[in-house]
Image (cartoon, rainbow, N blue to C red):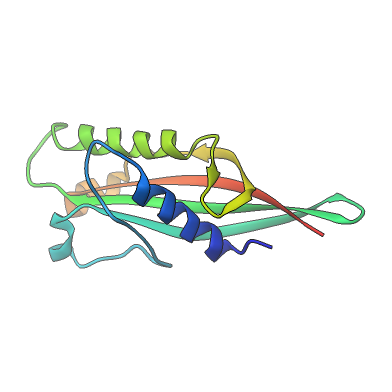
Length: 143
C-alpha cells in the first residue's frame, strides 16, 4: 500500500532525474514556505496534499492521492520576461509527470493534472515572487 508520503517521494525522485530547461533540485515538504531572502534561488517543492478514498468494488478501495508541486522564485525585474520561462518550466514539469508511472511505485497511475491559477497573483503583487502550483493526482487500489 503506497502512502501519500511514498507518492510525494516518488514524484521528487522522478523530477530530480528529469531533464528540464532550468536546473533545480526538488524537495519534499509539508509547507512550501521560505524566507524572502532565500527566494532568489528557484524552489521546487513537492507536498502530499490530500487523499480521497472510495469503494471500487466490494473488496477494493480506489485511493486518489493529490500531490502539489510548487515552483517559486523571487523576481528581480518587471514584466513578463522573468515569468514566462518559469511558467514554461511548470508546464515542462506537468508534461514530465503526465501519463507516466513513478519510480518504485508502478501501481500508482497518473489520473490528471490541475494548474489553476497559472501564477499566484497575490505573490506577484505583494512579494514580487513567482509562485505556481501544479496539483497532480495518482490513483492506487487497496484491498
